[in-house]
Amino acid sequence: MTEDARAAGTAGAAPDGGRPVALAARGLHVRFGAARAVDGVELEVGAGEIVALVGESGCGKTTLARGLLGLVRPAGGTVEHGSRPLVRTKAGLKEFRRHVQLVLQDPTGSLNPRHTVYEAVAEGLRVHRVEGDEWERVAGALSRAGLRPPERFFLRRPHELSGGQRQRVVIAGALVLEPDVLVADEPVSSLDASVRGEILALLLRLRAELGLSVLVVTHDLGLAWNIADRVAVMYLGRIVETGPAADVLLSPRHPYTKALLSVVPEVGRMEPVLLTGEAPDPSRIPAGCRFRPRCPAYAAGVPADVAARCETVSPAVLPAGDGHHTACHLTEPAAP
Image (tube, rainbow, N blue to C red; front, side, top):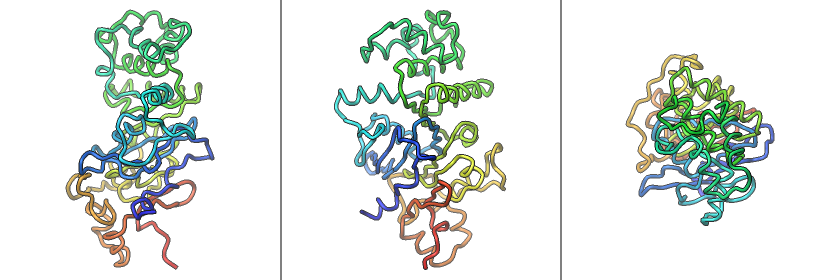
């Protein structure tokens, strides 16, 4: 195993409570030229689990989500649905996407303005040639998404709906195929604050009623606090901390997670931490710990032996207790 493979880790993103795995990245790499956008990521979403994937813009979280959906071809690693690897044939991808559905952040851009709500929700059924009563399936999906009575919305077009209603239509379009995994990319970022809570409550209800697994991609740690069972923190193409939501958000171990949380009113309990240095560039990843050039702990001074490792060795994802894992030399056990 290479040093990079060891550093990426395999234990750092396992589902809690021994859940079966619904969706997983296994050593996933996605590159755009010299840019290592996703750099050997290991991530698992358990059955019936909500995982929040958080990090700054440009950290690679949306690219990871697209890789998990089979929308970009990886340079290495695999994607698994349950225990089955994704088959990258036309038929294999089509079957996979029936079970793993995407919910985009901008409902206006997701919906064809010329299509009625009925046509928008029925499109997936027609693409996948799903048998059965189309009207009943569309009505059921709209009802589960909170648009009731569904017949009231059938002939409406996107411009006749509120932002929250449009997002519910997008969610209904995913639900109509009866998937077992949703990947929601910033699902409430374009909505008013008054509507955000309604959509988050809907995702929680769908998880409870349908047993859905959900990967929520977000820069908002407050959202993660309100909805996630488990949080995975991503920095410059890698997962650097993961664990139960309350543990990660109330007792963060990684300096990057601490900095992100320090400016979140809902969960921050510390003085704001200003990250210095240039914004991450995935085509120029530094040697050693990739967070070192911006790390407040390193800048403040660490023991010489730790500093040497920070400068030369990429930290592995290691257990920190109670399902919590982190990739930081400051949290590694002392050498015997």
